[in-house]
Every structure is written in structure tokens, then in C-alpha cells.
Image (cartoon, rainbow, N blue to C red; front, side, top):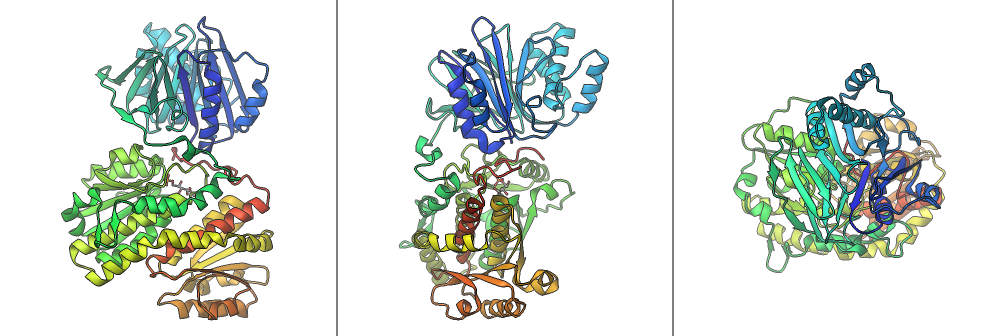
Length: 613
Ligand code: F6R
């Protein structure tokens, strides 16, 4: 949460920073701001409540000439969204300026100390407290800024990625991270800093991912990396494997729509080079290298949040069915605060699109402390979770910018499915015949997704019809139960319509009381061994005059007769069906949100990368 950008070099900093902030807006859009420092130490800070576009309007006609600057887009934690609480913040003596992504947990105590020393504050943020704490340490210890920062960071608890500048040192940016991401782009006589690589890729492909407890001192020609013990570290330069087109809308109205429509190719990319149905093989080096550990696992615990948690729930069905290994799926946020039982032979799989979700990161660290083996299923290459896992497999869905996760979810399903299949094959818990059949089924998924997307307009009509509903119920059984949860989450996020997902059979244990002629009930009723059961559930809703929208398998003649509206998808094995059945639900939420005039790429209160607890 919160996006940060910095630049120092020969170019005008402002356009680079603003463009970067627009790309990072998915991380928060409550306010934004820039601090521009010219070579003579002339500092200009501009900040505004609201989206980056408001800041751009505000800066028209202002002095924007500096060649060094830092910028921030905020997801509010301490203090409401306002101009005052927007970053950058200025220290009391007016010399230091800072932006921050994260939370300083002991800020209240430090603030109290500073108040007794005569400090006053213009915002409600923890950031301004940390900044003035650094200033106070620098003054009272008579040390340089780097040293003051090091001392301050040893005192604070919580998470941070900060960029700090000093009027007296107009070309230098000091950065530090713990728990919130930071990438440094290395150009010729210039450096770029950002929360992820998207603001950097058009300038350089050479980047350094800063690790926790590291501090960087950056000038146009120099990058010095140190740890908090003041030891110099050699920066490890990585080549970015990302193209600019991947982070642009490419003619679509919204990133979310683009990302939904990209799924045939993102799923294909995820399978490519791994799955070979003809040869009957799956090549996944991360799995292969640890295959003995994986196939002999006593238990697999999958940790994730939000949509990734739903992918994990589908994987629970798949892995238990194929591998006969018990699977537990845990919300990372709950797991981390328990005293979880991790036994020898347990495997942790962490699932995350961003690879930066704070709860998932900390949960992994906790499991690691207890000796667990961590396997990461991550989308963002080089992200924190990818780096702290012992092994892993990327989803290869490309940058996901729309706040609601779509293509990353289907990528997670595909990767988790391949992991399950590979373990099952090596373990001998699946027949050769079934293994081969599932490989072919999985290989066919991109084409089937393509076929579903060709009929997107049918979903648009359904969305238009039900857009004014105040509540929705989503019901599914087996592997489609997590899809009911995911369909409900998508609709809530993007259309602000209250929605709940339930296992269809649970409906009778309470939610059925909600059913009346106004309530749309979405059944994920694809053909599987429980199909007759879900048809009975549809009958029960129909008998109570609920409106039935069903996602069915092509050729099903029974469900349409019970449905007010239906959408047919190609037939697939029941374990693979979720990768298909989610597509119409993603479209339903998208078209409903658009019909209601909501900014679907930036729905209220959300941020894509949840880097605070
Ligand atoms: C929903 C959504 C969130 C994320 C969750 C976990 O559309 O995007 O629920 O799935 O915040 O994020 P990652 O997968 O980045 O760990």
C-alpha cells in the first residue's frame, strides 16, 4: 500500500515521478504528492488529496524544473485522506523531506517523546513522527543523516520503505526498507526508485531489489547499499523481464477488462514450457528439485489472503484428490497471530499475486522460524515472497494493474493444478490414464477461455439487468464453492453490491432466509458429480421466487429451465472447471461496476498491494 517514486539524474524529475505515480496508483489513491529539489537546494512540495490527476491539475504553472525529486501516492492508515496528511512531509527545521510506505507501530510513543522536546506536528501521520525523530537524532547526536536514520530505524517497529532527502544535499536520496518493497533502477548517470518496476522499465532494465534492513544512498552516479550495521553490501543487479506494453491499457477501457481478456494468453504463458500433453510431462524445476519432500509431505498448509486464498481453497480440493495429502488452507493474517503447529514433513505453500502482502510475508517468516519448507506461488518476479521462499513457481500472468485480481487468479489455479498433478504423478497416486487426460484438459484451457470471452456480451446483458440489486448470493459445490466466494468478492469490490458466497448445500442452514423475488442467486452449476444436487438447490430457490443466474456447462438442458438467466461454458473435468467458471463471474462484476459508473480499476478504499497488516 502506498506507492513511492524517486529520481536523481540529469533529466527533469517531475514528469518521471508523475508518470510513475500514475502507474503505482493501484497501491493507493487517497492523496498524492511530490517534493522537488533543485541543484541549489530550492525545495518545492506539492500535495493534494485525491487521485494523481488532482495533483497534476494542482501543479499546473508551478515550478517543476528540478532534476531530483520524490513522489508518493497514499493509501491512508494514520490520518484521514487530506492535503495535510498527504506525503511528502517536511521536518520541523524545514531541511528534511520524506515519503513512506508502511506503518510505524510505535509512532505514538516516539511522538510523545518529541512533543516533550518541543516538536509540533502538522499532520496525523506516523511518517511525520519518524521524519522528525530522524531530525531530532541528527541534531542531538550531531551526526550525518545516514547515521541518524540508522539510529532511528533501530528504534522503530513496524514496516517501512522510506525515501529521504536533505536540502543541503540536493542530488542525494537516502532510502531504506523493511517489509515494504523498493526497486532501484540503474541508468547512465541517473537512478530511479520505486515500489515496483513499472515506473522504471521505460528508462532502464537494470534494477536492484533492496532487501529488508538495507539502506541505500543514491546519487546520479553512485548507489551505495549498506545494512543497518553500516556494512557495505554489493548491489545485486537483476535484468527486468517486462515490456512497457504489459503495463498499458492497450485500447481497453480499463485494466481490469484488459486483464480479463488477456487470460487465454496469460494461462498459455503459465503452461508454456511446463506442460507437454503429448509427451505426458510437467516440467517445474521448483517442484522437481524438492519432489521427495513434496510427495512425502504429511500435510500441506497453504497461506494466502483474499483472492489468492480462494485459489488456495480450489487447490485444497485438487491436491487432496490427486495427491492424497491432507491440505489446510489458512488466512495468512490469522495464521501469523496463532501459535501454529508445524510438524516435520509439513510443507507451506504461500500464494500471492504481488508477493508483498504483509500478512502473508510475516506468516511465512513465522513458519520458516518453525522449520517449515516454503514453496511460493507468486506472480511478481523478484518480489519479497518470491525471494524468501525456499522454492517456488511463478504464475507468469504479467503485471496485474486492475485492483481486483483476475488473471493472477487463473494463473494461480493453473500453477497449483500443475503442482498437484506433478506430485501425484511422482507419488503414484494418480493413474497414467487420468494424468494424461488432465494434461490434455489443462492444455485446452486457454482455448476454452477464449471461447467464453467471445460471449462476454451475454454477461453484459445480465449485468445490466441486475445492476440495481442490493444483494447477491453465489452458490457452488466442490471445487466451485471457492469460485462462489471469489465471484462474491469480485462483485463486492467492483460494484459495491453486498454479496455472499456459500457452499450450495449450506444455503438451507441460514442464507435461504434472504431469498425473495428481489434476490439474484448465482449458481455455479457446471456438470460434475454433484450436478443433480445443485439442480435441487436451484429448485429450492425457484420455489421461493429468487432470481436464478446460472453458470452451466454447454449442453446442459435442465439448468436453463430453472434459471432466469444462464451462461454456458465449455465442458471440462470437474477439477479444471473453476479456471473456466470464474471468467463469467469476473465479467459480471466488471460490467456491473461499469454500469453503476464505478471506477473499476480504482474502487473505493482498496489498494492492490496490501503491505500493511
Ligand atoms: C481481490 C484482491 C485481493 C488480493 C489480496 C492478496 O481482488 O486482489 O483480495 O487477492 O489482497 O493479495 P496478494 O495475492 O498480492 O497477496
